[in-house]
Length: 163
Image: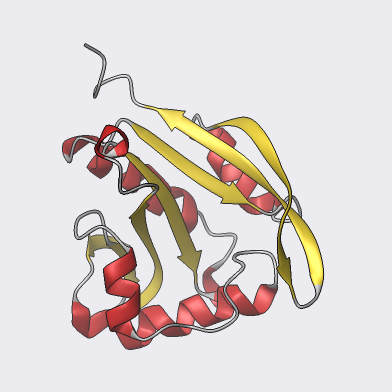
């Protein structure tokens, strides 16, 4: 498996994988894959990572800013999605580990993830990589008419923002 930077030309496969995640009902509150331009504006220009096997994208990871306030410029929200047929093979873990490493290179000191409590695989991978549960957003949003909680996991860098 090769990890590399995402290119705009990857969007078709990235969008397909994103759609598969949306379809699970436990990966995001999004209900439709956005156009590339919309997705691009919502994600940081750096730390967009692709996992590829035999030139086929198996997963992707990216960061979004959590706030427009400058005091939070080193805090970002994590997105990791893995192709249906590639789940359970460690790809998500490798993507998240690389995202942690690359984020520190770009000055990010805190990573946050909002995870559905039903998404046991995501919770497990985050905990394995040192993320800790910091809270629960109770009935934070509706999905298909049902209110859902979201668990908030966080990882604080030991290399960036330690002065």
